[in-house]
Image (cartoon, rainbow, N blue to C red; front, side):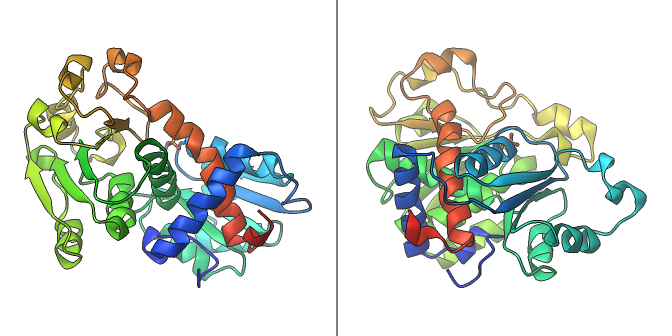
Length: 306
Ligand code: CP
């Protein structure tokens, strides 16, 4: 990888992705290694998180490194008016790596431009969530035995969903076919559709979430309608319960169908689905630990030791 930061999944070539997934598999076999001894990682979370922050921090701890950082920016000097640039430059005095989640699109890229240490984007607004995509691809490879020629149906908030936008770009190396299921208000943005057109990736768009679509699907990627991205509360209320996956909708689905969700879920996957062997979203979050161990080693240039 040319750039030592990962701020966007587009930076990762097919080879980069396959290498990170190979390394993630090695970490899954043996997660406790002392590869980060003497290193400090800073987790700067300007937006809430459960999985991303805790799995990154666990990844560092299991590799023998130390973690500093915050999960509530209101307790930091940014609440006194300190700029992101100054915060990043200060943290660069103390840490070897920055893992940042921010509500502004482009914040991680900007952070990477004002520091000499690697930056990992842990989600920037509605833009990108590259480490999520790598763990999604790891989960797809584990459940399907391959990454290529799969029908991926993405359901829910396709407009604001940063995991969705990253997944499209990350999957583009592997000849996917996409089905996009969203209400009019949350349709896939033109930018992502133009991207698919340019890459010759076939896709269809739907407003109804039907069993017929599920039955033609290999990977069913459910997403939450994100209240925090709406400026109009009435619009959120109109679409918040638009699609709910229930167990009986899986009756005629493919044997190897895999149901993914970046989580958190609200009500878009009914709890009876959890009983299905096709529900993989809890293991998917577990895969985040191994994938993030691989990502950290990649940006720190120590992947030859894995
Ligand atoms: N998938 C994901 O980003 O989850 P968190 O918001 O809990 O980190």
